[in-house]
Length: 137
Image (cartoon, rainbow, N blue to C red; front, side, top):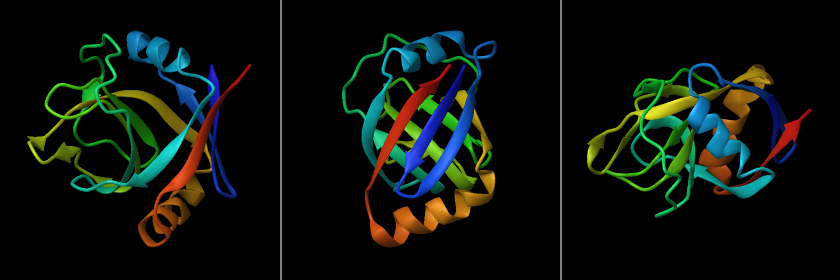
């Protein structure tokens, strides 16, 4: 399954990593369609995030990493920090005020990668942005 992601006039398409992170993908699919706020990450470097507070998705760790590449989306199931989606657009080391974290790599952008830098500049210099995720059948 693929997902269309829109932020302002930017459009991305991501592939869900259903073999490597089946539980995370299932939890994410249950959230679709999703509309939220994307904000610049505070501790993770060149990344933005979508905070979900104390939302309990009933997930553990699978396909977890602290060093996602640009366009490798992470779903953090909560615990040391709040539940979130991390959206790396450049060099990233996932972390929080508690220290380094690992999140579940559940989706990879394969269309629009050339606009990831634009996304970073938009969020960094213009503040929080509306983001939407929609399933593509």
